[in-house]
Image (cartoon, rainbow, N blue to C red; front, side):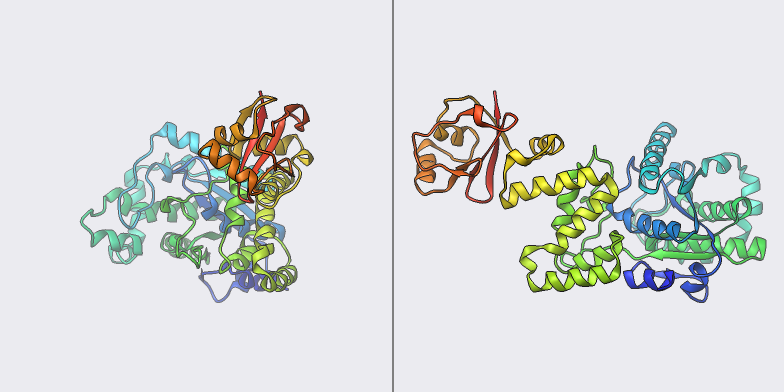
Length: 414
């Protein structure tokens, strides 16, 4: 299967310029760039479809330039509803540094070239910019762009700073075309107008052809919500902002309506393998096989195999049963960080521990739970209301107290 066919089958393609996708990706190996403005200090799940697409392109032999917007990040592209808060130079530099380090891990330090548009934008003079770049744009064209048009018709209006943003992004494309031979820009669908501004600028100034390619907005079909950080539900690639366990849980809990689409977009599993997973999963959706495959694959891609296996094993223990003694050191750290814990001493009654860990609201309720067979400690059912805890029997000083299948507490030996 040609790359263009695979990308279209996986659902990566929303808009392209030029005749067809094959013209862009199936022929000569191109230099392709993607830009991200450092308005935050980490990429998030909403960025991942573009990043995974770029990895497909790298794997096919195309050269990728990862443009970090140290210059444009000080302005920010127009939002549809409000002006972005301008970042200080120090904030931008810190965000640039963190995103670059993150991208190097994701792509491999040798897989892509990194550049910062502050290098050339900071050297531009206003007169030079207006004469050499501004004259190639008309106000008529700019006000037709979605973000600009929506702001012009709103009460908030639009600052000239934001109005000029498409010109700056177009200049980036021109600069990379001239200095790096870059002929393709890839971005999210919300960037189409800005990307096309560069395509048109190259055509007008250089009488040459360049291409635009965008990825669709990724939306959960069950909720209609997107992954982007502006929705308040950001899942970050930075493990300090979203832990590997939380990251795994996000993908594990995606809706049935979207899970197959996400397997195609966010993993490198072969399409025929995904079809097989879909067949097996559709026979028993409750087992959530597709979600488990998705969660492991994406967590492995972002955080590595060890963290993916740890998140998988901890998740299965917490929600599906299992032996806490089987957890390794990494998994023990993860379970302590992500499950409710309670410190206990040998000799404490299970009744007291249930109350202290808030698995029961009172001693009377705790005894009722025990008598009804709802309580277990490290997989062993507790049926005696006088039972006590012996911490010397804990594995690595950790025990697992359950009430039913879903309520639990990790017991830590004092």
